[in-house]
Length: 248
Image (tube, rainbow, N blue to C red; front, side, top):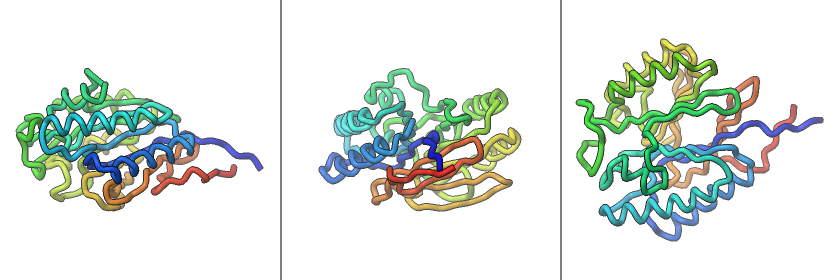
């Protein structure tokens, strides 16, 4: 019997780190678990911190960054609404040591294209920053939608979408233009799955052949999730444990 190590992408959402020893230990254990499981990359899906002021948010983000730097692979960060209560997106990435990183991104791994999208805009297109927003009124900007259409058109691989806000249905946790975003994904006919956070509870929807999975929150005790990829399938492992092996 042969065993193979498939490509694995870790997901952590809604850390809401507050600087407490409990929060620090929880995030440390998540990173240790992902490293022990030979996970290849990590996407942190927003709401990294619960800051009480700009200086406090900066300190908390630096601590989260130091813990995530212990991960043995590349890390991508998506901002969440709480990350922008006291900071701009540029400040968010600067503090994480990712100066100049865009809030939406694309990478390829394991035969899939991964697209991180940013729903932290008000419906009029104003970017969230320094608390200038109502979190229940979020949207993907028209500029980003244009980028998404182009990115999907250019992809020669099946695609996985990762978002902080939900885009699967009408809810206060979803972007207001969720229907337009889903239409963009559907027209490309390449999107295999969408992973979302923000709502703090697991939920699974299937819309027009695409799976939309909302992940429960790290702050509420959820373990890291892992997307496991091979040439045949994409599979989500919730509360990942490193002792799992897959026989072929």
